[in-house]
Length: 135
Image (tube, rainbow, N blue to C red; front, side, top):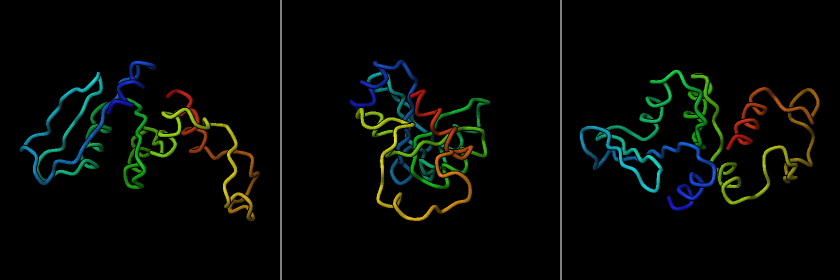
């Protein structure tokens, strides 16, 4: 939370963090604030993923959703938002390699897994790249 608060002060971005409270929370979602970061606890019987889906779909806003959960990422795409993997955001937060910088991975040395130019990003990869540049 301290790192997110520092990031918010540095960039001015609005940040909402959603935590699970479905086993021991209240009957309604709870909102607090910590260092300028909005914190939401899901309600009793509701997971954080479900609360994130509700937040994404309630407004006609394009969100940048930081999550490594595939279902949340797929839902974000369907709702017109852009999901960014947690590891990518953490690298951005820690000042590591940025979007668009080539970082070779072991699996990059094998044969290409898709058709087309290996240097061209897919539409979704381009959207994620743009979102990371905004962060």
